[in-house]
Image (cartoon, rainbow, N blue to C red; front, side):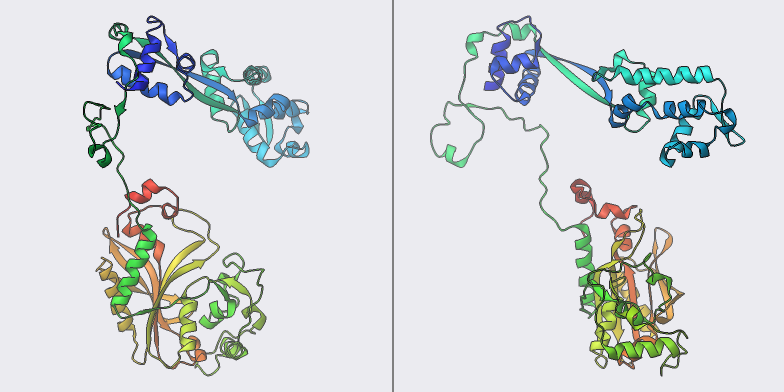
Length: 495
């Protein structure tokens, strides 16, 4: 028995038949933290010296909307007061808007009235029985007024009303209040109080303690080796960072070099260099994050002239272009890059006559609605093979090798369309008996490479990292990757 248990038992023996409450034990012993009472009481209960009783009381109080209802009345009451003051022919939803009710009030309010006998007939709101409807509203308002002076025990309230208002946001709040009491058992009452003095106890065995003789004859605090203990968890990389590192190692093993680039780019390098027409819907504010500071980014006039000629009439690439005027100011607009392909075209522009095999893994930004498979900020895996003999079979073999090293040997490609590659393919892997599309690939069109100074074919691909992460980590919601839930993250596979 520890010293805390001795103190608690000694106090309880001063009135052996009493049922002790928390505040009495705290003040009687001089403790401030109820944790001491809970811990000591449980230890004494395990020894059979004390019995513990628990009672749970449900307390109901007004929420923020309930406080407003005290002054203004419930929504259904306010709506019905307004409607009942109007001629029956004028009781319409449109008239409620004219009377000053907001759309977010009228919709839910009509739903509440319909649940107590109001129907819509030819666009007019009709009460089956106005007397019964008024009685129900009065019952609801009386219930709210019962809570005006503070929390009320749930046992004193109508259960059906509590259930009804719990289904309405912010009107009431319910909390459970747990009360405990401690009583001596027959065994506890028989303990000799003179044996409950303070004793020196050793709670931890250390090397320093064992080097002396103080431990000899001392009392040791008991330790249950079978009691549950927290499992220590050391640090580990975030699953996304671990996956990025794994992908990086695969490409490095395949002989590729890594490149990086800035998040902020000009529309010229992000769009025009890739032969994406300036009228393309992806270039609108609804799909791309344009910046107000900086609003413009300088682009070399040399490239603006070349892109202008390619877009308008194809220049000397053999293409007819898009046949529309090219706006150089549009090319200078600053934006958050929508893909990492901008890094690879810049790399080609800087090294037009040097063979290269490069890849990059980076964040991109698009105006996406957040759901289980989409985020406005995500990662792409980008790569190119830029050399004289680059070909589509070489591209497909490279992608199959990559996915095989990632653990997915069954890969297929399908014809596809992208503005800046021809031919173009989509890449699928076989996962749990289904083909899943993970990215696109193809050979850069001459309209892309020739203005950059390169005459060689370029194999290019872009893949979504988060979609691959969902498969590898067995997730059904992409948002789980970025939630600060350490327990969930700790359960994810180590890559």
